[in-house]
Image (cartoon, rainbow over all chains, first blue to last red; front, side, top):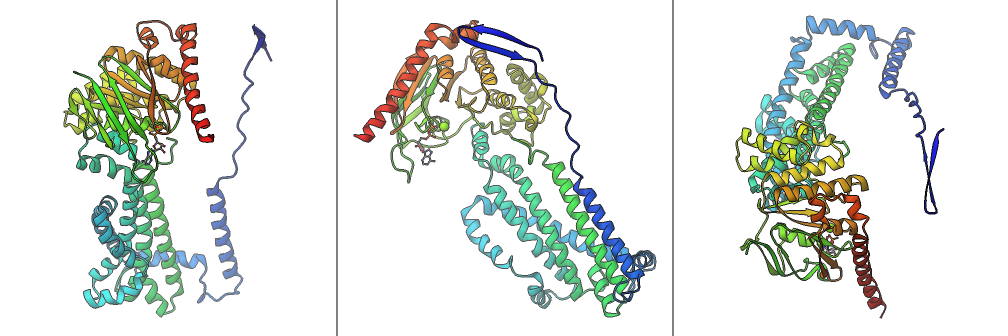
Length: 282
Length: 264
Ligand SMILES: Nc1ncnc2c1ncn2[C@@H]1O[C@H](COP(=O)(O)OP(=O)(O)O)[C@@H](O)[C@H]1O
Ligand SMILES: [Mg+2]
């Protein structure tokens, strides 16, 4: 290693050449790979147990039977509707409820976050119904609004509404006060503050609220369809269970899980796209 | 009289014991660069927030060019230590944000943003994302944003406090250059003695408990740098070192007095 010496009074400065950087070590095995291996393991175990004949297909049909059933329900259908029609019915309900919930919950959340009065009025209402399991108030909704689409959409709507409103209010309350001051000293009016600083600042929280809401909404929807429906994934599973068509039950459960998982991943991707600065060093 | 005048201002925060700022008077005349220096807790931020209009004095008045200050306003541009940029807007849109609030047309905004970004040496960064910039660059964007609105006075709260020593010195030189080129008055607060002595045309020394002004000095190191003398030759000259040591001694004198007072 080369070095040079420089003397200044009684101080000696030694300058040395920088050491060669060492290449980074190979990273640990990715979590995704481990997850995929786990999934493969479970499938293999499932297949093995069924192949060995230890469990009757009535209790647990083998994986290949589920795949065959998937093909059958997708093309010919089950209970007067194809898998796509069941899925479409469920998707329609959740999308309608989600759109309505976002339209109402975001402004309500903003109001709660901004105004003490709005907070005093709305916060207790939301906090009162939020912890109640939706299935507990479903009977009341059915009595009030009948067993049609409205009741189901309303139930999902209520399940999605609270998380979005609460997350929005939190986001609004947590806006960096210096950001507000910066905008004020650039001449922002109150309305401009809300529109140009507060709402965009709360956007990451709003999206988190949507993600959580959609998760609760989806599980509520499936439960709601167990009670009163003629179509939908929840209905499909429920009626199949009554006739002990286990492969359709398993298929339905897998489809429901896959959709929930896809929604979660999709929303995370959306969040990364819309708020790429989140989690970055400031 | 066209000046920023802080006249016998006191501040008591509700609920807090003690006076944050006691009977402070201060003038920021045109062409000046007034620096308030003092240890943490001596009321520097309180003073700046008063001038910016973020808080109101318990007593006393603040006027800018004979207009009383009653709240925040675009004629007093503020640069924060934590830059407070808006991450969903790119550099150019952050700089033009104040103009957008005023309803200035996009083409005009872009032209003005380009102009001020040029001033802070970020001419080719208008399209960059602010959260990908370094601390020094972000601080320059913050400065450009305040300048774009063409304020009467620039208020800076420890603007270089979070930067490392090397970038800090570059930023000081940049500020002096902009100060000279735009002719804007500046009120800056810092707890860095060397920075204060180097930048100030008027140096105000503050002391805590209660927050007050204990000494005022008129200096010309910043002016000289703005006129072309190199930073290092100014900071290394005996005169500069003597002033720096004097200020340091004053700050410590007030600290010790207070400590002795507490014991007695
Ligand atoms: N919002 C507040 N409420 C109560 N006390 C405050 C508030 N802001 C500042 N103070 C107090 O006022 C004094 C001066 O604070 P500040 O102006 O922030 O000082 P500096 O900027 O010089 O560090 C400190 O004692 C601080 O604790
Ligand atoms: Mg401070």
